[in-house]
Length: 444
Image (cartoon, rainbow, N blue to C red):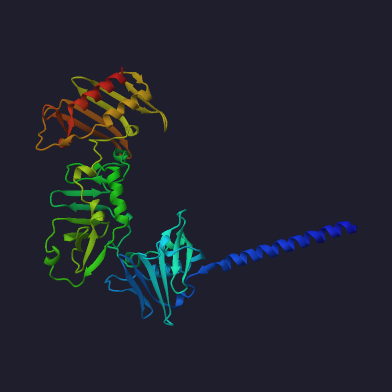
């Protein structure tokens, strides 16, 4: 084995010395960094109570080894409290040399008092964000020092009582809800995930929800409104449980209700009844058959307070072109019969009187038909000889289905749109005329 030269040995020893010095300073720097950070709370298991002083001030205290939000009737969520305490345990900060009045700590509007079982306490005052918006100034009044704490650490702890209460109203996961029935005193509105139509007939429905009542047929729902409804369901919680064991509902306007919402699953249902305003921002409410009164925010109820027309996506009958095998239009202005042959998953031949129509041209023209929108409600419309008949044949797993849209004269400017000889909506004649002209140009 070849021996290393003296020069090489010295070089190795020198490198080891340099690495040792570097490691020493790195460890020393890390130690100083840790020591420089002040940990506000290091005895989480010794905490007996926490008082949050703010515009929604509240106290959480331990009773018989369980946490309780003081003066609230709701069940306290033990896991949520434990998570809140764990978040507090992460609060660390570096001491800064600033004046109280300059960082919002002279008269703070938000503070915490943490009491321990040895009768000691922490009083933490929360001030302003720093100029970079990445940290809060927090003063420990017992220490008399001000520290800068990362914003993410502070905001991981909730300063609102609802975060520590079980305020859920609906007992099932939101995705189990199949129907929502709204009675707002003026209209009865039925929103549902179920329809009597083949899946192919409703393929253009991007929300997966339909509006049936107050209409004869099932129509696609508006994306924006259903998003609002579904987001509302994700946070469908009471503001506060006001009373239990209630037998006299009149005080809350709940002896009868002009606004109810019924939520239906495959095997259960709950009817929510709204009463009189509790505040300018909330209503009293209860679940039919139960004896509790709680409050709901106006903002939460807003998603369920629109007229039926707002939940409708606006289209008279929206069909996806790729599920069709035939399309026929008859009117004084235009009459034709189109055959649609599927070549493969992405290609189709559109043929009128033996002539193949350019696919891109036809798809653009078809939008004028699929996009016919309602311009009003057809009140007392009677079926008679239609001026325009549009027959669409769709292919589905059980065969074919023919859907007929008949446009019947209603007044000088509008047609009543009939499907299966029942009409819900009106269509502007000008829109129909423009549609027929667009399609006529496309099939020339």
